[in-house]
Length: 215
Image (tube, rainbow, N blue to C red):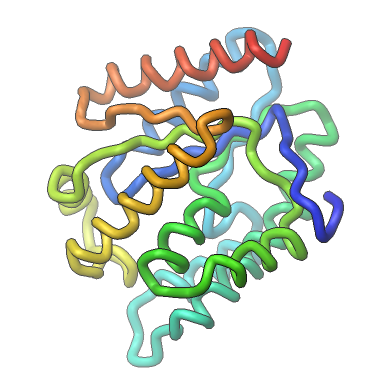
């Protein structure tokens, strides 16, 4: 991908949302819908997605006595993302496959930007310099903080970020909604308070409509 610019990739779809929004279930439903039409699909996640990026994920999410500062967290996220793009996303897109990612750069604007207080211009600079690609479609699975956290509480021991307070996650949610409103051509908002089947169905419907638009 080109550095210093951000290119929209039509076959790149990201899923965003707070904790407990149901992204994994939706990702599987989208992949199945694409595969049923004969498309090749690469499913991935952030932070992570490649062997090195997964090792960085461990640094980011493991609770230790020397947890990353806000700035270190941001730089680790972008180190992981740069590796992810060059090793996984760009090659998959070049091959003609669809790429479905559980989170992408919008997450940094919500978590490290809005919630951690890092200036948006810093994140934008890193995005342009080291990422260079943006999803053609982003599905925001929107759920109230209390509902999402109640769901996530049944998944086992929380990681370092999941340990944050409700106020942190409310800022994240508000930032996501603001980004969706600012970029309606890219974002589709899905009511994630519905049942998993209904949420997955709504997401697949948005994907199918999007595919019709870009055909």
